[in-house]
Length: 159
Image (cartoon, rainbow, N blue to C red; front, top):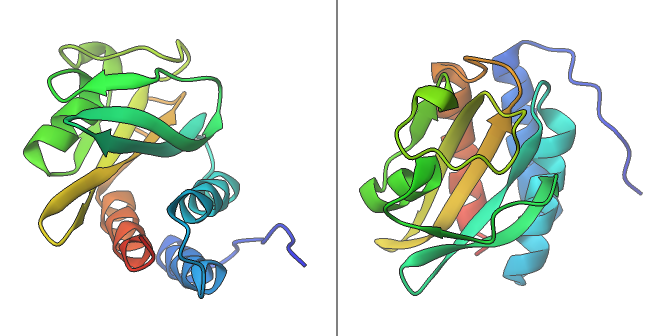
Protein backbone atom coordinates (compact mmCIF):
# COMPACT_ATOMS: atom_id res chain seq x y z
CA UNK A 1 0.00 0.00 0.00
CA UNK A 2 2.78 2.44 0.91
CA UNK A 3 6.17 2.89 -0.70
CA UNK A 4 9.17 5.19 -0.42
CA UNK A 5 8.68 8.26 -2.55
CA UNK A 6 11.49 9.71 -4.65
CA UNK A 7 11.40 13.47 -4.27
CA UNK A 8 13.07 14.67 -7.46
CA UNK A 9 11.57 18.11 -8.06
CA UNK A 10 12.63 21.48 -6.63
CA UNK A 11 12.65 21.78 -2.84
CA UNK A 12 9.44 23.83 -3.02
CA UNK A 13 7.63 21.24 -5.16
CA UNK A 14 8.90 18.42 -2.94
CA UNK A 15 7.60 20.17 0.18
CA UNK A 16 4.24 20.78 -1.52
CA UNK A 17 4.08 17.08 -2.41
CA UNK A 18 4.82 15.93 1.15
CA UNK A 19 2.22 18.33 2.56
CA UNK A 20 -0.35 16.91 0.14
CA UNK A 21 0.74 13.39 1.11
CA UNK A 22 0.17 14.26 4.76
CA UNK A 23 -3.36 15.39 4.02
CA UNK A 24 -4.12 12.18 2.14
CA UNK A 25 -2.48 10.04 4.83
CA UNK A 26 -4.52 11.57 7.66
CA UNK A 27 -7.83 11.90 5.83
CA UNK A 28 -10.62 10.32 7.84
CA UNK A 29 -8.47 9.49 10.89
CA UNK A 30 -9.27 11.26 14.16
CA UNK A 31 -6.81 9.58 16.52
CA UNK A 32 -4.11 12.09 17.49
CA UNK A 33 -1.43 9.53 18.31
CA UNK A 34 -1.91 7.71 15.01
CA UNK A 35 -1.78 10.99 13.09
CA UNK A 36 1.33 12.24 14.88
CA UNK A 37 2.99 8.86 14.34
CA UNK A 38 2.33 8.89 10.61
CA UNK A 39 3.38 12.55 10.35
CA UNK A 40 6.74 11.82 12.01
CA UNK A 41 7.29 8.77 9.79
CA UNK A 42 6.45 10.79 6.68
CA UNK A 43 8.88 13.58 7.60
CA UNK A 44 11.59 11.05 8.49
CA UNK A 45 11.25 9.49 5.05
CA UNK A 46 11.10 12.89 3.30
CA UNK A 47 13.83 14.93 5.01
CA UNK A 48 17.47 14.18 4.37
CA UNK A 49 20.36 14.93 6.74
CA UNK A 50 18.30 14.60 9.93
CA UNK A 51 18.75 12.30 12.90
CA UNK A 52 15.51 12.88 14.85
CA UNK A 53 11.99 14.03 14.05
CA UNK A 54 9.01 13.93 16.31
CA UNK A 55 6.55 15.59 18.60
CA UNK A 56 6.38 16.77 22.15
CA UNK A 57 2.88 17.17 23.58
CA UNK A 58 1.83 19.92 26.01
CA UNK A 59 0.79 18.18 29.21
CA UNK A 60 0.07 20.53 32.09
CA UNK A 61 2.63 23.16 31.15
CA UNK A 62 5.48 20.87 30.20
CA UNK A 63 6.35 19.03 27.01
CA UNK A 64 6.04 15.24 27.10
CA UNK A 65 7.55 12.99 24.45
CA UNK A 66 5.12 11.93 21.74
CA UNK A 67 5.50 9.92 18.52
CA UNK A 68 8.95 10.22 16.93
CA UNK A 69 11.56 8.66 14.66
CA UNK A 70 15.14 8.44 15.93
CA UNK A 71 17.13 7.50 19.01
CA UNK A 72 15.43 7.42 22.41
CA UNK A 73 14.77 10.96 23.59
CA UNK A 74 14.21 13.10 26.66
CA UNK A 75 10.77 12.34 28.05
CA UNK A 76 9.87 15.66 29.71
CA UNK A 77 10.97 19.18 28.82
CA UNK A 78 9.97 22.21 30.91
CA UNK A 79 8.88 25.28 28.94
CA UNK A 80 11.89 27.11 30.35
CA UNK A 81 14.50 24.71 28.89
CA UNK A 82 16.02 24.01 25.52
CA UNK A 83 14.93 24.80 21.99
CA UNK A 84 11.61 22.99 22.41
CA UNK A 85 10.88 24.86 25.63
CA UNK A 86 11.62 28.19 23.98
CA UNK A 87 9.30 27.43 21.02
CA UNK A 88 6.60 26.34 23.46
CA UNK A 89 6.91 29.40 25.68
CA UNK A 90 7.15 31.96 22.85
CA UNK A 91 4.68 30.14 20.54
CA UNK A 92 7.10 30.89 17.68
CA UNK A 93 9.28 28.70 15.48
CA UNK A 94 12.86 28.48 16.69
CA UNK A 95 15.61 27.65 14.19
CA UNK A 96 19.08 27.03 15.62
CA UNK A 97 22.15 26.84 13.38
CA UNK A 98 24.40 25.40 16.12
CA UNK A 99 22.71 23.86 19.15
CA UNK A 100 25.96 23.97 21.15
CA UNK A 101 25.69 27.76 21.12
CA UNK A 102 22.06 27.77 22.29
CA UNK A 103 21.76 28.58 26.03
CA UNK A 104 20.12 25.72 27.90
CA UNK A 105 20.20 23.29 24.96
CA UNK A 106 19.16 19.78 26.01
CA UNK A 107 21.44 17.22 24.38
CA UNK A 108 19.34 14.09 23.96
CA UNK A 109 21.44 12.93 20.98
CA UNK A 110 25.10 14.00 21.04
CA UNK A 111 25.16 13.87 17.22
CA UNK A 112 22.67 16.73 16.88
CA UNK A 113 24.20 19.95 15.58
CA UNK A 114 21.21 22.03 14.42
CA UNK A 115 17.51 22.05 15.19
CA UNK A 116 14.16 23.50 14.20
CA UNK A 117 11.10 23.48 16.44
CA UNK A 118 7.63 24.52 15.27
CA UNK A 119 4.86 25.12 17.83
CA UNK A 120 1.54 23.41 17.17
CA UNK A 121 -1.24 25.88 17.97
CA UNK A 122 -4.96 25.21 17.61
CA UNK A 123 -7.64 27.73 18.60
CA UNK A 124 -5.05 29.73 20.55
CA UNK A 125 -3.93 26.70 22.57
CA UNK A 126 -0.47 25.12 22.44
CA UNK A 127 -0.94 21.43 21.67
CA UNK A 128 2.79 20.70 21.43
CA UNK A 129 5.77 21.13 19.13
CA UNK A 130 7.31 19.49 16.09
CA UNK A 131 11.03 19.00 16.76
CA UNK A 132 13.59 18.12 14.07
CA UNK A 133 17.32 17.63 14.70
CA UNK A 134 20.20 17.31 12.26
CA UNK A 135 23.77 16.06 12.67
CA UNK A 136 24.77 18.91 10.33
CA UNK A 137 25.35 22.54 11.32
CA UNK A 138 22.95 25.08 9.81
CA UNK A 139 20.78 22.35 8.24
CA UNK A 140 17.50 24.30 8.32
CA UNK A 141 16.86 27.52 6.39
CA UNK A 142 13.96 29.91 5.78
CA UNK A 143 12.49 27.64 3.10
CA UNK A 144 12.46 24.67 5.47
CA UNK A 145 10.81 26.83 8.12
CA UNK A 146 8.15 28.12 5.73
CA UNK A 147 7.13 24.68 4.50
CA UNK A 148 7.43 22.91 7.84
CA UNK A 149 5.08 25.53 9.29
CA UNK A 150 2.66 24.71 6.44
CA UNK A 151 3.09 21.00 7.22
CA UNK A 152 2.09 21.71 10.84
CA UNK A 153 -0.93 23.73 9.66
CA UNK A 154 -2.10 20.76 7.58
CA UNK A 155 -1.54 18.47 10.58
CA UNK A 156 -3.56 20.70 12.91
CA UNK A 157 -6.67 20.05 10.85
CA UNK A 158 -6.41 16.40 11.98
CA UNK A 159 -5.75 16.98 15.68
